[in-house]
Length: 151
Image (cartoon, rainbow, N blue to C red; front, top):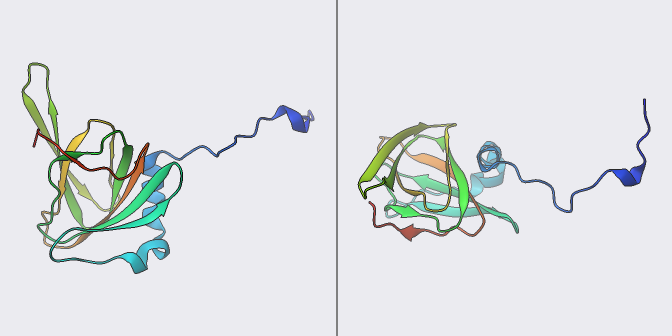
């Protein structure tokens, strides 16, 4: 065995961040942290801030059947969202070379996640018969939501 002098191991000033999906999954699993924040609003999708630090924001969202976002991006933010309960559908749009708009649909169930980055345009909705809950992690900025011209 070799001894390593204390002054030879660099200690990070800030701990490394988890990947946004891992962070979303960890917050989703810690229901005691957000259980009392959860609400269902029949008039609009509900969102509550769970945590914020200098590097990320974490939001709880609930979705009653039929509730949806408009087509949007998140500015310069990167991040991820995880479905906690229920089902959500994500429609992703992007412009292909030549200008044609391409669309992808992703059906997500509890435990599944999606990531996003700058310029990622999507719409999320609850098309199922039951309420859904999701946790969203935003990095490199706040929870910016900008309407998209692609939708």
